[in-house]
Length: 137
Image (tube, rainbow, N blue to C red; front, top):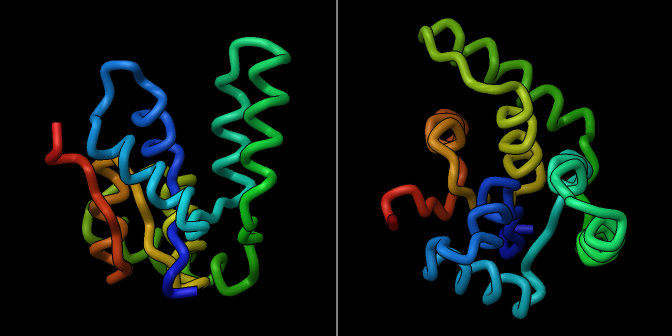
């Protein structure tokens, strides 16, 4: 799955904003058009809970469920356990959901497209390829 790109919630949300980062928006479109985009149920959950109404919810759900879905498997859990433990031993506390999403990317060998300072830390810890738009503001 090395050519697959897991788009994190942070990148999706930043790409939805009218005044958002144009390079990030272009990258999300490029990834979608190249059929490289994958998702996971946690990202779908995070995005759907932010929908304003039933119509937006149904449209978002339909689009996201059309993408290849990477299930949270035993390997991703093992990666998450170790990552959370190791980061905390270093005095670094990050959201558990971010650890899980990055661990899914690691366990499937995907790149992680994000716009999240916590994921910057986690992807370095996991030594996974990331497309990080934090410095592109």
